[in-house]
Image: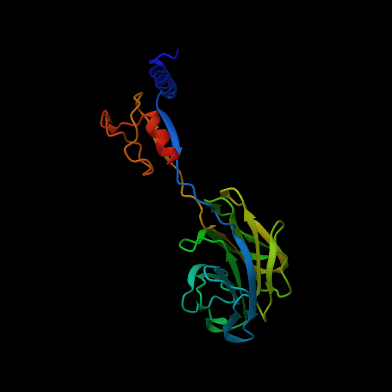
Length: 288
């Protein structure tokens, strides 16, 4: 014969388990966050061109471009004259060395109707080269996770300074330029996407996947000795989860959360002047 009081005994045991865990936590902290499927940041294609000896660089649309791809453009040139991008392009940064070489970076989120090419206008007639690299699976609202750059004195090493990423599996893209002509060899561990020369400036683009958020360390490309510029840009994959929030269990009670899924642990009661957060409410919030 099954006792009619058995369900109460089980319920009591569960309650006591919650209480024991809560007491063990004392003031426990539980991370919560909204899980989101993250897309893979993937290289699509690249295109490049040089200016000859004019004040424009016209670069063809990268092959196979699709709506919501993120395009990165680099313009390398002799001197530090200004660069005006086509409509819709957003400046990321500009770095120069000794007034003799400069490289500007821009980005654009592709629409469903892109032109066949893009013309960047220089502030003076000079030898320049440029390139566009396109990536899919990138956050179209905030595509740039981090960026950095520097000019370097005369050397065959073209150093891009370390940057700090904040998301997992960022696409780390390196941009390298020098005035010595010839070609540039990508840094170890990176895949070369562009090596474009001109009368004066050479443009190199290379990339890699950077799995763990944090400092990337420097990236060093090599070429003929000369003044040069190195830059890094980290692209944020689409669906990158936001930083997790944290709730603090401050009660040994067993009340439920009032609104699971709002990232606030609150039973409706209070502990001192703070909202009451029981272990049950914290678990409900974390699992919502």
